[in-house]
Length: 430
Image 1 (tube, rainbow, N blue to C red):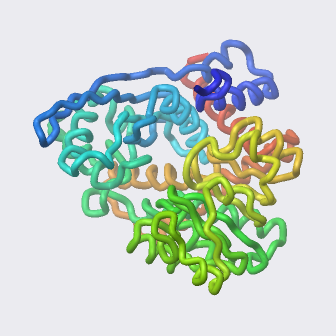
Image 2: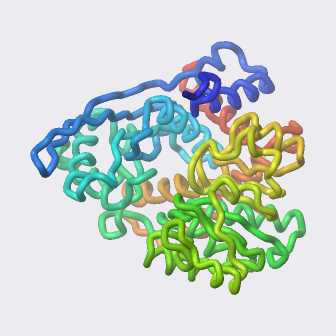
């Protein structure tokens, strides 16, 4: 069992408390960041296709809406519990403030394994979720989005159910929808694209040449796979990638297009060389490729490490073995506070999740805007606006880090908390 000292929510609080002390906030101000404004819970009852009934715990946590409607994804995952959803809602509130878009922070979850459900049953879960929480969501109240194990099809069912239940036309009540149903161009690549813009800007400022830099990516889902393509196309050498089943490493670099092709065919990034745990060693030797675990990938020699999969992977146990000089967090919460301290001592630059992966929520904001105005932006519009918004966020965090002599994570929390406090004062909450 996890010691009480480390759950996703206590990890959020550790960082928040450190920043609150530095900002010398009053007890009244600090109290506003301790707990969410609302926690909504329900049990979804689903009738399966075989006639049996499923009862699934479901949550919508609304952390803070001082700066705008609550905003945040809905995940379908066996481990989605109240503590995790609370932590993610808190991080969303900070993230939207860091990139200065007019949203608060929220998050949702249904405790289920969608891989064990039919498509029809997943649709049932999606619609039941909306029926359970419809009074607490809407374009001006709380605007959900996709997250782990949810996608644009699920968002479409949710919008449809919401419009049915409320008898309304409401394209802006949810984001991450299919293009044909009120989605935005560029939403699928947004998380990686934002992280890529930040990395490019940093390497530029450090006068480093992408052609001389090696990158390791843990996770080859939406964010990780797109990131691999962007980096490869920009001249970086991607030396390792992995998915939930492990990964491949070659010091000479690997081609993400090939990896994607074999993952499509075989279901895993190592599929070109391995079937399950049985690998063609001779072929791997010929191509100078090694099979690696998700633990090993974090400790490979490289310039830039990108955790793009699960939370809590860089910990006090392995932080010392990380060889990267830069860590860009595309995943939510991949680094523990204890690991942060070790990395900082080693001089590793960590670009934290609340800045690094804010491209997703930024393009969600563009989608919400388009939904409210009835316009459709072009790809160029989305890309240039994303770049502008994300780099302004990066510069604000960089200035704060320099001025206060703190890590980028503490600087990002500091920028976020200050912006939230300013909004709360305006609204008379303080």
